[in-house]
Amino acid sequence: MKLSELSNTSLRILSSIAMFAILGLIIALEYYLPQIHAVRWLGVLIVIGAMYETLKCFKNAEHETFNKHAPYFIAFFAWLILTLVSVYFVGARAWIMLWLLMIIVGADVGGWLFGKIFGGDKMWERLSEHKTWAGQIGGILCGTLMSVIFFLCLKPFGNDAMFAVLLGIAISLLSQYGDLTASFIKRCLGVKDFGNLLPGHGGILDRFDGWIYVLPFIWFFIR
Image 1 (cartoon, rainbow, N blue to C red):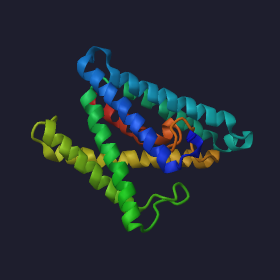
Image 2: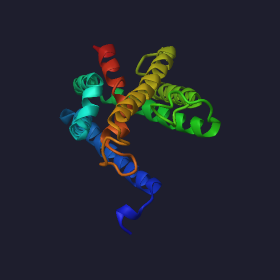
Image 3: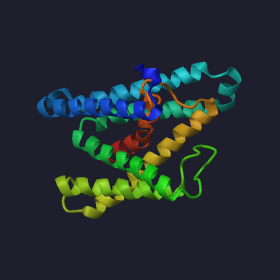
Image 4: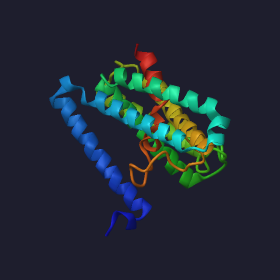
């Protein structure tokens, strides 16, 4: 069977398996060879890839479309540059990146699950037809739960469990609004995805848009 003959769900599952395999390799490298900072450089490569996809979309946009929304596009790309700087510094602390990953994945899964189960009113249908208020609440709950689980296992903040809860809420919200921001830019560009590198997911930025506000926030927080 050819790759093009697989369903979108099958492609999504296969690419997710591949991403988790890469993540496992990076974690192993970080554990056995911490001096090479594998997590930091993976993060840098991901953001650079997202920036390349964004520039490619800008280049392919119609002249009139680009001029109409130019302030948004310029601000968005400037923010991606800030995200690149942020991931370089935050990525040096692998445990923080693992904690953020758990929260963002939890928020993503929780948002999808609660949205499917409860449905309800759309948040901003013009930006994303699938985002609901129930999904946002579910994302916050599941993301915060992941933060608390990480705290209970490693206790990176001493005994201050409330700190883990508050940061879990903040990061869950920021990840969801990163997703909405990327959706807004795609709507302005008139595209469904930023790219097609990750079958079933779209481009790099389509998969990692939840990080664009989180990383600068954490960098500012830990400075």
